[in-house]
Image (cartoon, rainbow, N blue to C red):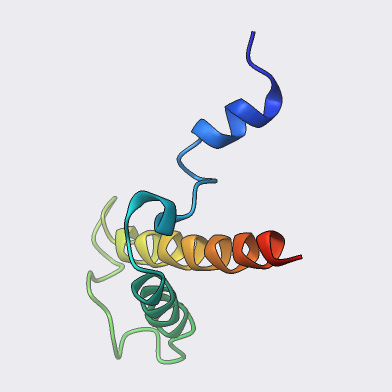
Length: 83
């Protein structure tokens, strides 16, 4: 029977991208771009997929949120391993 830590390690949302082979610089860079995209005050100046399209209009925001998630995960995992 697997314990909780083993299950957490196999969850794709909790494994940093650097452990999967992506350079840490790219993870932080994509996270920064995602934060800028999500904080876009104009709500349409930098819009990849128009929000008024049904079902797919918010896919770009969800992808940006996922990139931001992995950047934060990378940051906090690095801090946890340091100290």
